[in-house]
Length: 104
Image 1 (cartoon, rainbow, N blue to C red):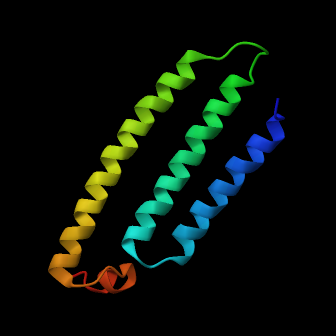
Image 2 (spheres, rainbow, N blue to C red; image 1 turned 135 degrees about the vertical axis):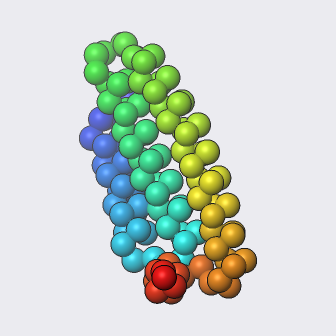
């Protein structure tokens, strides 16, 4: 069995990649992907910790919460990508800093 620390290190790396993507990227599609990486890292961490809470016992409540969270994240990303497409059609750019300057 793989130790818990390996799983936690993997989710920490995913979280760092998501934060890096949000902090450095200017493209709105990449920002949405960074948010999705953050949500998936949190979900994976939740599943890992629920599976290792007690030896031989996996909490089904954590799995149900993660399933609901995954469904909501899919809906949110669909709405966010729709907004990105409409912003590109209207303004002709996906650069978040340029779109921020267009505020009136």
